[in-house]
Image 1 (cartoon, rainbow over the protein chains, first blue to last red):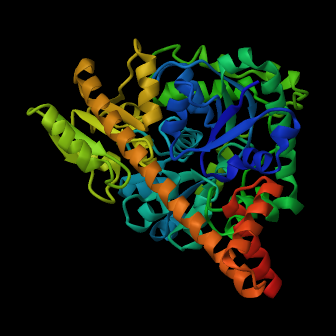
Image 2: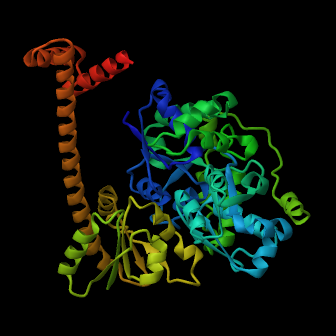
Image 3: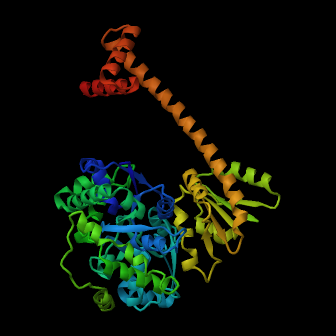
Length: 333
Length: 192
């Protein structure tokens, strides 16, 4: 079978794919994989759409928007596994810190409209930010301006006062607070505990063309996810991610960003839960003025059957925990 | 028609501007300023068509303008030719994407995008040739350095040093320059 091309961005939560490639784990599972580090989500979406990539580390809402034909050409994709949970943070400019502790986000917004950036219009970051805002008593569509910036430009934009805050994945919140330009107002796990973050998205025709290759990729990434979760290997993983072709940032900083106990990504939550897809669909329908039923089919791109076929298991169901609690805590600080 | 050209570092921009201007007198071609965010440039200039280098990370900003900023801005939509997927694939492979703003007609975009693709492809092949030449120069310098080392330390003559490297390259089925680089590295660590 031919080489399978997987796209990724320079982010901490691409770790399982980077580790698997570096340790030649794909090869030992009998599949040839070529990684392609891309500069933007738009590139990932376009290349998936026109067959220049077979799969990618993807934002679930973007995968669903592509499948629904709401972003570029309608593209048949499948999501056979999740790659990470948690890991994002809403970071606000340092000058807002005292105000935030006293009055919360609603108190700040009541006096001044904030400009907040997310990494893509169809992203977990956007949906979680909006969910947190509304739970905090802020109307996302009118009381703040939500714009889009590349993750690596968030910190410099904060420094230049071009934005008042951002919601992005690890390590960008840590980078901003390390530079004393911003502070982490809320971690994404506090907005939705163990929320699904990145997923593996594959072109649907790859599953038909090379089912054995798909199984091999899923097995590899299941194993890689477990390896990435090992606390004693975190230093080595950070060193790998810090290399110039990936994040090109200090390893010490990445190691902190990778700590799940400090809000970093969790890599062993891999089951592609259709209930999660339904949540994304409902939230996108709510905020993106999508036609009624636009995401009905897109929910079905989640394929737990493929995950099970590759030896995965369905986890014990836990009730989802959303940020009502956080809201109360912030208000009573 | 107002066309905004956004490439990563200005390498393609001038060439593309010249080509587009000669293509049609009615084209008003403008550039994204250095350091300016793509979304801000679209707001400032209000173009009909945006030609974007796919190497720009801020391209995501245009992906969802319709969804988010409808009250502030006319919709920006990616150019998609449903009838010609091969053309779209070629554009992406060339590293060019294009967006239309407001209601500009789709057929008007294709020739603009085609020009951009030609420029991007030509510049890339020049770039590839340049890196090829640079690699050749570096390889030659490495081989020369390894030979000088063998001549100075191992008292070999120039032809003997050359044959020594050649034989090692054949034995290990590697390129001469690779063998030379390994030799230099080993000797250096050996000295420390």
